[in-house]
Image (cartoon, rainbow, N blue to C red; front, side, top):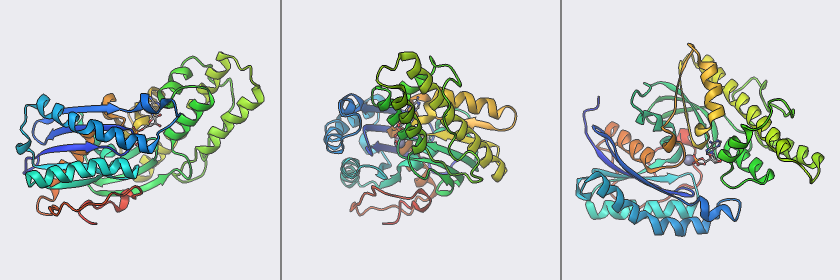
Length: 348
Ligand code: KG4
Ligand code: ZN
């Protein structure tokens, strides 16, 4: 498919997962290893940035060794090192960026700064029958909720996005309100399975807004108000009903807006990526909506949340499309805030 064959090491360290992977443009994903900090942050109910950075430092090199060993590859065979340049936690990003640039300097191979969301939105290309360009991407993570028109690698147009909380954030906050552990998405989803649909009435924010934007902070507040009204002796079934209604409301809005984005663009390929793409209720709802009308693609379940594989893949695709324009200066900056539609890894 591509003329230039490349072997790229990917390093992800933007938040609370250290991910390292090796991607070969001919053979696919050779190895990937991940260390999750979930257990460390659980007591705090969310990510503590300084703890996250220190933990990345501890794990990134052992994971690198593990990946090289798993793949049976020598580090000198690597053509480039891709790392998450942003958006994310500044200190955490600096760990991956330093390792990538240090390794690049030692090996005289380029270090390529990748936008974290670009990694997510290209990650469904790692499946066996990947979608072809163009496609619509529904990015649903802890920090972002966006609908994106993806013309090709590096050509992205935002069609709509959340005006406040990301949907993953709303899942996490709802989990906290219900007394569940961090990260809350999978926990709320599991509890929702025990709830009765329609038992609690919650709003569908911006469902009829006439555009492709979202809002999730009101939904979380509606859960809070319901809990306050229920008093302190709330039973497990009421919690499950509330979780069910929250999930149903969030999923209904995400599905409706994704379908609308496909209709508006005339595209029949939807990819869903980011942590919330692992959600089974969202997958069921999109599957039901798709029926003969459009195809839906997801990353493998293990690659929905943050990982090094998506960064390695994005690096490889960038390198193949632009082999001559690589930065070999090894001076780097990270971008804790970074708009994907303006993402240019070759720029400053
Ligand atoms: O993509 P990701 O790993 O990190 C960011 O880039 O933010 O996404 C993490 C988010 C968290 O908010 C987490 O609660 C949510 O994804 N999440 C889920 C599920 N698995 C992870 N939300 C709903 N259902 C899930 N199964
Ligand atoms: Zn992510």
